[in-house]
Length: 400
View 1 (cartoon, rainbow, N blue to C red):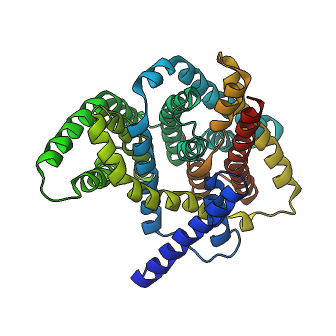
View 2 (view 1 turned 45 degrees about the vertical axis):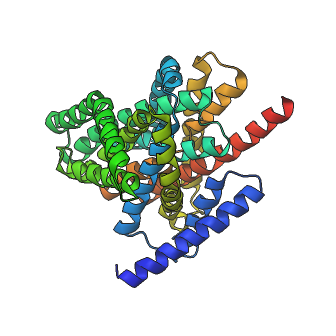
């Protein structure tokens, strides 16, 4: 991609994201809906003005990492630990119910092959924590009990998603499971969760120490952006399969690291305040790029809208994708509003579902009709939950 083309694409993305986000807020919808819609308008679904390049993809990944860093910086670790049991229940139910139901619908009702049915189940299992966090932030619920339950569940959900994708990837390329590669991914994720809190604490102390003696401004944003780039590089040199490396690292390493890292920095209130004030403009610049990127990835024009198979399969899949995630919230002891909000928070598939779907399409596992149905389900489960959460929250506020 030529430099001038990238500049004009980035300019359009940033301006469109801002305009559509402002319109969404004025229409009493979460701002993330506007940014997603900006991607749909600019991308292949409508005008086709912007084509996803690797540079835009990397900037989007930095955006979601920085968003989750901000979440970690503001997270109350005591509340997160307190909600651990409920988070585990939500994560496990939200993982297994959609996967099993999706597999049953594909294999038993639509008579798809075993591998295709497994991939369909895996695709509708995924949850996009970035979209969920942004919606909760828009509703000022990110630090509430609901937000802490969802955040803990999303961490577990991501790990399970990485493991499932590793298994399906090996199954698709080799006709069986390569335990060595799967073991590498498992070891990679496990080692991270053991070492991340320790490393996060050490790095936070180092940054704090140098920031207090530095005579040049900008040390904090430079250090944190450098960490983002370092973990992106580290993803490549770890032993995960090539096609899986970026995804596994993004979910299991880069993104997850910045939650404990943010919590470690939060131990010093004054230092945390300085970080937040210096990082917020950068976060606000990169984060909209991620949500526009998700919209750009939804190629709705490629769907054969006249196919009855697409509509029927989409209807079944959307039902199990939505209900499967909502079921988990019925197993926790919370009031009705909290259960609904937690369940809805786990529904958005976003970019994570698209990664599964794209892997199946590139591997020849999905036909055009199956792929089109999955893209439609991902789009619906990405756009509808934020609107429902906004409506439910406003209704609860009126009642109270």
